[in-house]
Structure formats: C-alpha cells, structure tokens
Image (cartoon, rainbow, N blue to C red; front, top):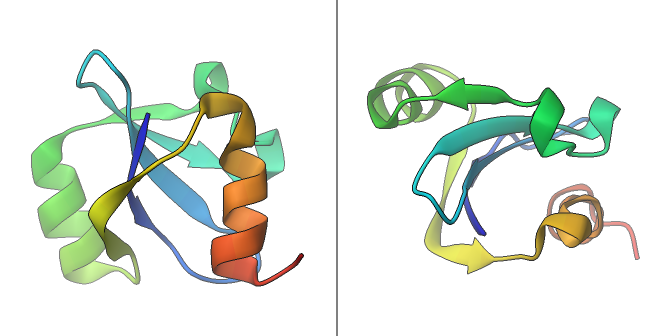
Length: 81
C-alpha cells in the first residue's frame, strides 16, 4: 500500500491508499489497523488534512506493507529505531 500523507507528532495519523485505490486514515492508537481506520476522500486529503491541518504529503508516496505501517511511523515520523 502507499502512504500518501501523515500528521507529524507523537501519535501520527497515516493516510494510506489501499490497492483498490481507497484512501483510509489509520491511527497509531490502533496500531494502524486498517479495519479500524476511517475511509476518506481525495478532496478531504488535499483540502482538509493537508490544506488546513498539519498533515504532510509524502512525495513520492512510500510503499509500505500493511503489517509494517507501525514500524514505518515509528522510524520515519517519530524517529525511533
């Protein structure tokens, strides 16, 4: 899957693009469980998350296997390990 954006900080939110093209916001608190994530639209990502809040676009999107999203967030955003 592709990590399209993130909210930097201690508890990062990742916006990921599933292989189907669906966008989903996933949360550290749920260990980035896709089933517990929130489906979002492309407009929301651009206009709300990136446009109005502190989300940062990941360019180019990072290719990360679903089981590794937590490791990615800890390494790339939080700076652990």
